Figure: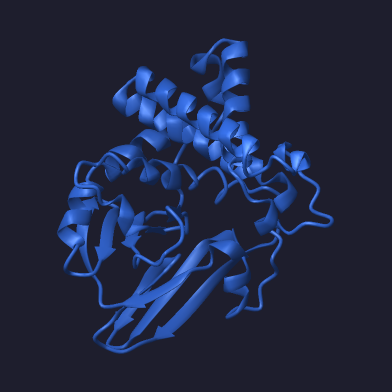
Length: 266
């Protein structure tokens, strides 16, 4: 949340949510985007409005020499001209993922779902800003083999963005549920075996994380961590993602499978 606080008087705890309106002045030859809907565009000025309350870490803005291509009736991909066609092809399944996620989790309340391909220096796979997911160009593999990151960010539209952990000690509620829903999206589009493969891969990554990164910090292998003397960034690992989603899969299987468990997700 810290970068958002550099240009906004917002509070950092994710339990504190707000709506916002913004007027962005920018060079007329550039395009401005935010984690909100465009209200009005004029030469060098773009107005935005976000009517759904969000925590500070989802406040996002981007300005650049960008062009877009449609991915569906409510989705576009934004990128520099040199890579926008490749991005549109790579993320062509976005609308199917969005519809599948809605079938699982309920209505999509954010209205627009766009993707912005970031510069190579962007240090994450994706960032789930409402209405405008940031995504790394390193997933432009040419065969859609890495495009499942979009399923993860779409899942955040419900798990994290709409229903949010109260504080960062319960971060697993955000990411664990998101990975869990992500694998369900993959399973419905590519089959149950693919979903199971994703879960097994995540379990392998979790074991490796505990063996290496957290070998000397066993207290950080818990789902609910104590951040009294540790910052959220210092505690960051794959545990909230993969241990959380594995725990949810265990509960689902224990209770009788998706037909029993999924009605509790919306």
